[in-house]
Length: 78
Image (cartoon, rainbow, N blue to C red; front, side, top):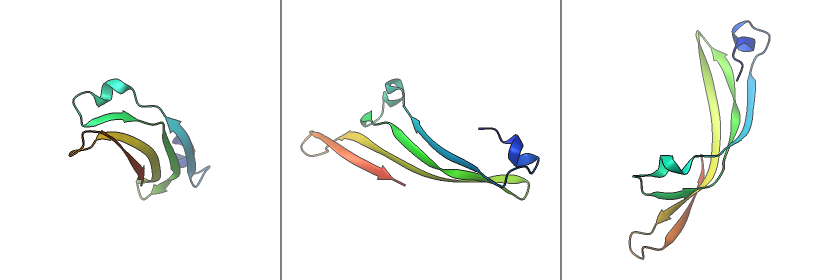
């Protein structure tokens, strides 16, 4: 993401729309068994001397059910 367009005023915001694949090694030691491709949308805009980042994150986590011990899909749309 090239923030120089925001810093020098040539752009008012930068749109974000990408897919992120999470390496399975990051899940080791957690309660998450698997994670789908993460879809990230949103924008970055200048705010005073900083940047404001608004994101929407969508993915599906595979967790172990606490009672049945079966895999449970947990959808995230935040």
